[in-house]
Image (cartoon, rainbow, N blue to C red; front, side, top):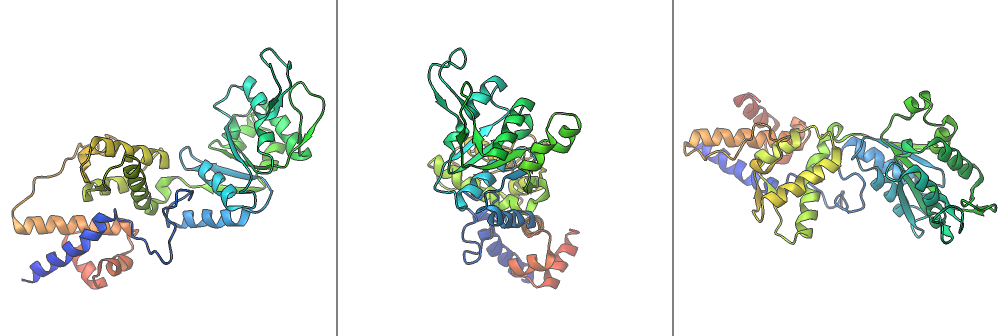
Length: 346
């Protein structure tokens, strides 16, 4: 009889966790976790630190340098600095330095005069000039050529630009934010990046940790992207099965947030209109053993033990393996949780 009561209790506790994708939010203290503009949706210490840094730097005009692996959301951070800051009424213009050939990038950044080179059929305003009064974001700044680095350094020092083919200078009022996934100190040692430009750009620095170092944010990001893409696909809200969610939480995410985002889109497409996304919808990287949903056991004791193990594993993952907090959140006493963990050798 006692076992039946425990199973009934755990069933009631599990239902809201599955429904909410383990996204345990307090609307009074965390009302904006899922805002589209939030650069780091999450409650990890690293995410909180970055949010605090954004608040400190958003209203200054000093350049901001953002460093982090590819896919960690560096442009979102730059955009958030702009949208929350004093320049939010001005334009936000972003350029990826590695995506435009060098011979075209100078014209794109600084503009040109009619007849400055073959094909220059009219005067062109550069993107930096178009960002006047706002924020200019240079992504992958480590790919910028040395000649363009020199021109950018002069711009940062003099606050003025000269279009290609012109002799006059033009004043600009632009806040610069730059980002890279390269080790700039190493690039400087190899002669690929100017040290004077580096110090000019990195007056304020924000380092973005990879997703594997803030696993506590994964469940919130999963919930965010599920809601976002279900809405875009005009389908009913979907949820991951407990085992699929466990695989998502334990994966190292080398591609960071971008990889997680792509994985969720893929799962939603493969699961069609099913409300529950099972582990066999996950990619081979996340599910290398090609696990599929197990056949339901009709042996009560086996089913109960499997249920308890899955539930406890998921709850511990959700609450950062903090046993005291886990016990509190799922409604067990601390000793009651310890007894269950010992019983299942967890």
